[in-house]
Length: 132
Image (cartoon, rainbow, N blue to C red):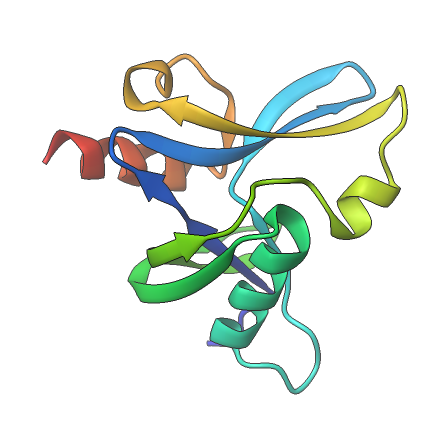
């Protein structure tokens, strides 16, 4: 399978790091990550994207899940370790304006159910992870 998106589930105790998007009046959340560049391995893209978007240095753990739908073929890793000062960066920071906002947020597991988190399959798997 060829993946076009790599993302990382970063968990700190009972919270998960999400990217809160407010775009043209729509309010939703996504997992930090992004496009896998040509000749780049998914693992390399995941580490690069997390550094760009969050300023975190991460050590990848296992593959958390894979999502193949009409939007993308995504591979989601679980972060084994992370360090650094959390701050938005990369193209996301450059694209911020009144109609296009990005906010990094630690979301408590009890608040996940009420959020609009894409893709939905990943949201369900994160909730399952916290309940196991």
